[in-house]
Amino acid sequence: MRRKSVATYTLGCKVNQYETALIEEELTERGLRIVPFSQDADYYLINTCTVTLRTDQKCREYIRSALKRNRKAKVVVTGCYAQRSPQELKKISPQCQVFDNSQKRHIAGCLAKEVFAIRETEESHGKLRFISRFPQHTRAFVKIQDGCKSFCSYCIIPYVRKEVSSRPLSEVLSEVNILVDSGYKEIVLCGINLGNYQKLVPLLEKLNSLTGLERIRISSIEPLHINQGLIAAMKSFSKMCHHLHIPLQSGDDHVLKIMNRKYTTGDYQKIIEMVRKSIPDVGISTDLIVGFPGETERRFYNTYDFVNKMGFSKMHIFRFSPRPGTVASRLPGRVSPSEMRRRSRTLDNLEKELREKFYRQYLNKELVVLFERKVQGKRENGRVFHSGFSSNYIRVLAPASEDELNRLVSVRIDDVNYRFAIGEILH
Ligand code: SF4
Image (cartoon, rainbow, N blue to C red; front, top):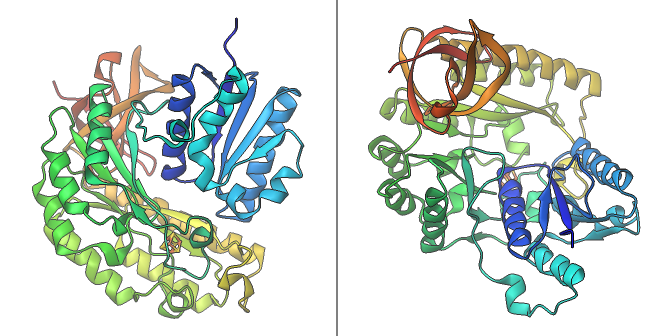
């Protein structure tokens, strides 16, 4: 008998991606087959995000495209959009079955029950499980924390992931051990508000001594969670990547205040200086929101000047999107969409300049790269290029062979542009 198939699609953050990987693993264990989203499947699973209006739109598009691909398929919808507005999603089609974030752990059990007409006990539904692989990725994301109660005025997360929790350290270690046994060399620790993880430095210390693991990266962390202990850990633990993603959101103190961000640009600058003093080669990336209500032209240029001074290695620029129920959705002083686009373009151009400047420091120097994939279409004298990231998160391209994939390799950088650094492997 042909095994029933499930195709998944994930929108949003690393935590969502981890949670999809976990569901996929549970489905496979229960005898279902995971197929690419572009294929015909018996079930589609869309793990949604609701961070902006545009993301909501995309989620609905993916649900509709799944329904179009196989008119008989069932579409399971979960994630933050499903949590925020299940009715909106159920209305798309009677074939949509909606699970909120707290019900995610039951999805695999429910599908298996339906497919095999078996009785699953309550315990087997919510049973503790680990991922042993992270499909289509060389680096595995590991969720260590969930939830946020910070209530930044623009953010929907505290409404859709309000239960704040930290995974026990021993559980994280067991999962990383399994991933290392499966061949993963780098793990990326992630959370909704990662800095709230109660034992971050002790966890890093344990991971640093784990045989077979070569790199530990931490994903986004809020500025006020960066302290001397964390910096010392990043400096002294040899496996720690020298990269921090520290969301700034605005470089104007008034805007930061109405965003309820709880720090000033002065505080932020001190934190960056403290990190750079200890770890000179650190790459610091950030998130910014343009067009927040009340962001005048002058305040926007305060942000422009501040990010220029901070010299970020990468910036993710978002246009303000009012989320229903948040404080910011009711604030006066909205910026027009065309002005938001202009501000976003202006910062985009600065972003490219800053990124190239950061990369340029490594010309004729050596970077250690974990190669992840072949670069489509890039060949020179018959040599195939592969790409990967350095510890401080520079994308590096070099002619390499399949053997060099998922290995840490030294590369001498010969050229850079704002998209990548390019060089030769040093053997
Ligand atoms: S810290 Fe602020 S921006 Fe981050 S998830 Fe929490 S509320 Fe949202």
